[in-house]
Image (cartoon, rainbow, N blue to C red; front, side, top):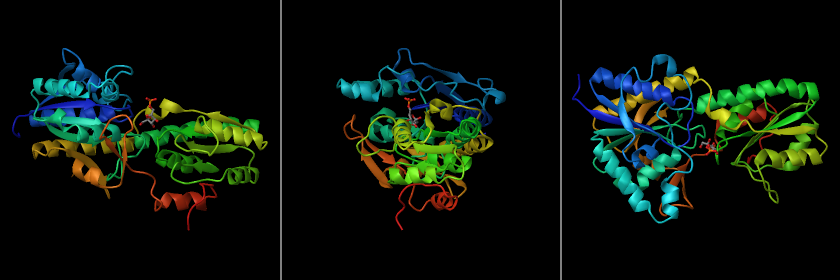
Amino acid sequence: MSESKRIGIMTTGGDCSGLNTVIQRVICGAAVRGWTVIGIRDGTDGLYATPVQASELTPESVPLAAARLSGSILGNGRAGVMNFEAAAKIGKLDEFNKKLHDSLISLNLDTLVLVGGNGSLSLAWRFKEIYAGVKLVCIPKTIDMDVPLTDATVGFNTAVQQLTTYCDQLLMTARSHHRWFVVQAMGRDCGKLALEAGIATGAAVILMPEIKFNMDKVVERIKNAETDYGIIMVSEGISLRGHSGRAADMISRQLTAAGIANRPEFPEHLMRSGDTTATDRILATTMADCALCAIENNETYVMTAMQNGVCKTITLAEFFSTGDVVADPHISGLMTSNAYVSPDDPLLQVAVDMGTYIGEMKD
Ligand code: F6P
């Protein structure tokens, strides 16, 4: 048995499927090592609350059968309460951060396992004072796949499955009504979810923020389609010059104007829910195990990452020195590191070869 430790775990940012698997595997791995696990409720809401919302987790806290369920038994936070952005808006960020820090210290933790996405990791890097005196090990989770330096994030595979199933089922009614469905995928500025689910369901068109598209070519592709029904997958982050509104609505209006029968569809948070796929369960388990090893090795300010099939830790410094970094408009000095669909992504050519219009690819 290794040196006794007291570790914390919290889930921050948007939920996704696979969080409970991570929590359950961390608890079980810690129990084997004789460590204590403290679960913080509702992410930073729990740390900001008085008294701090946290309690000990044991293997009974998340029975194996519940580990596959979506959401997080710890919660991810409530909309409308104090958070980084709200505190920045009223000039109380220092106060907010100090409260989070004091709460963490009061929990007497060796290490905090932060299960978060791009935003949470960026905030942890920007406001290191929150974690002073506590080691930090992060596990990346997001359906957006916008975290650099990892080939996989917890929740993405389930989101692809959810969106694919949704489209597969829509196709039946599409066929009956000789109609197209313009399905809006989540993903913020990253088109990876739209790309993968679009290919999986056999979409005729996939539009992503990373690739400029020509609306006339979209219309042409649909008018020349071998069927009079199908799926047009659009990522929520696309824009159409001279038009505003939601992505699927914008494209739907253009298709209607061109005489193509269609409906916009918004599967929304269904993409973040659904029983965790086996692939995500394995990923969550592997990353939880890697995080526990990092804690054993006294690592800090690291993130678990899958690279070429191997799970390892990378430093958050590496995370922020690689790839595109964009400034957050709401919080001074906050840089968000974004990963996008790379022009070299082999799936782009796969989509083209399938006859899918994905925009104007550069040669
Ligand atoms: O980052 C995850 C995500 O689901 C995005 O894909 C989406 O744009 C956003 O969160 C939705 O956030 P909310 O749940 O606050 O509506």
